Image 1 (tube, rainbow, N blue to C red):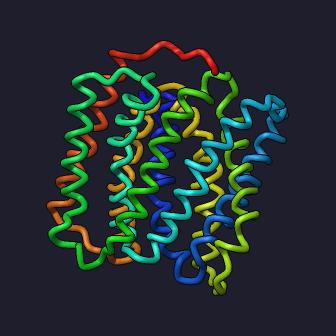
Image 2 (cartoon, helix red, strand yellow):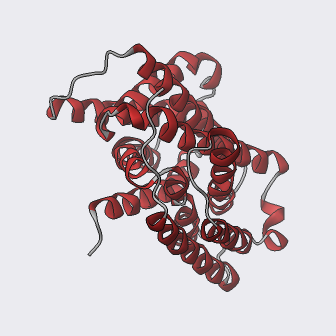
Length: 300
């Protein structure tokens, strides 16, 4: 029977995998800045409501808020802007798959930058297998006409931001002992404030709202940016940064499937087989993580 954290892992994977579809739909009437402001404000409202219902106090520790500011920028504001912009340049299938280099970058960051997670031979093999699967899903020999160098660069930049945020959260935020609801609420609220303040420069284009765009933004904000971040923080706390980052291995499968079914984007049998490799890599990584679970790090 799947554990609670396992269900949270699955929920984040589905919510974030579907976000590429919702971002693509939103770009039909909104600019990148509008999408980021909308999803973060909606997410912050949902999370603040959760804090209210659960009667949780807001943290008063200044050092904690400084750490949360880092993950608000690296996990929300900057990557959301990059991905929203890329979604207007490329099919949602390519955007979702391009960001799957995040686990590879997370391992690199945790080993060379933070050095707080043990990386075993099994973990490295799982990451390598996942990378092969990602290349197969991307199928660059078939889809380069749909992509741009700038679009790929934006996705890579977003992946690098996510990698830093995964490792930074595990190293500096999780050890401080705040629960997942509190951390997620502080993170998204801070990110929403930053996005709103930056709106005069990032959200100056015209707006053309339709029922489909409104529905996409509600899904993107309430679930993809609100509830899913509670689950995400819980997964990082329980399983660690490298394993939590493998969520982005499942996102392409979900993103490709939704892009194919809803938007009519192309999916080949080669890509389907490659996604099976991706899923296999997740199983290998989880097995390695269970055998080599690190002790908690003391807060800085």
